Image (tube, rainbow, N blue to C red):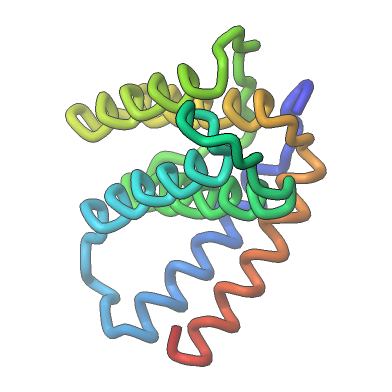
Length: 166
């Protein structure tokens, strides 16, 4: 994800439609779901770390296939977008910094940044959290095309899941 030129407006728009669909489907149109979405973000972040196996010093098993890791990565993009919408924080462009962290350090730092946002849910802290997540994506080797395509594919899956009572 060199120069991040993803069309975030489009992804926020797609996520807004999915969120609305889910809220309507579950009679939650007036609900504030920040707490649930934030916990889901942390759980999904743990699932992503688990697939990379970066912290499993006791194991010789290799990390999951790239496609599995990308799907887990994009699950969190959904929650990051959704949390931004919940707080009315959106953006058109965002540029993550280059990271020199190793994967385990990057995950630990990202958890810290996420908790900073949770404790003080400002727009500045939201953007910082999103940037850190994109830095992790770069570290994991995902291009912006990878992320866009995977987001579109997972977005369709999420609608299908809603229609089948997931």
